[in-house]
Length: 121
Image 1 (cartoon, rainbow, N blue to C red):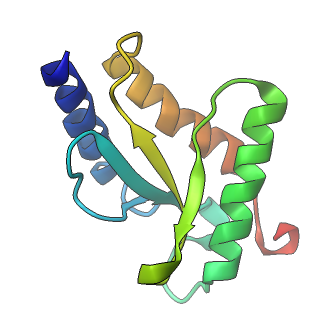
Image 2 (cartoon, rainbow, N blue to C red; image 1 turned 90 degrees about the vertical axis):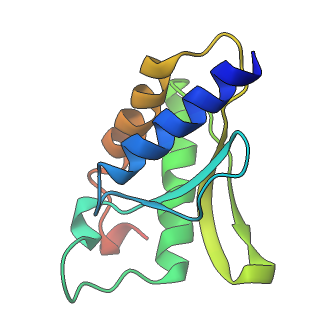
Image 3 (tube, rainbow, N blue to C red; image 1 turned 135 degrees about the vertical axis):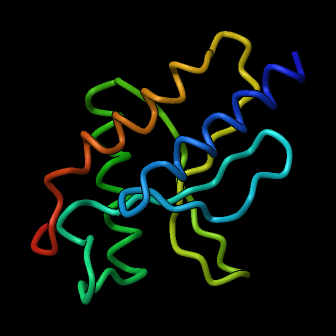
């Protein structure tokens, strides 16, 4: 079971890294926790401002949409002692999840956030 959890954490990390611009690792995973942030298309690109306050608002908006749709539930939180705004934290130890669920997590976050722009946050 521990090996499966580590495999899922490694897989999710690799998938986050394959989507630069949309997703960004907060740090390299230690154990089975994978921490990353999301950037909607409207905030991607050179010279586009994406402040910490906007990041927090984007993650909260996506979380609220997750709850309303009941499609996914991933906790988001800041790490204030390291001056990090809200980010997603996935603990990959659930025995009922598999690698395709890791892809769904990222796809669903992207889908739920793809229309968010500066006027909404």
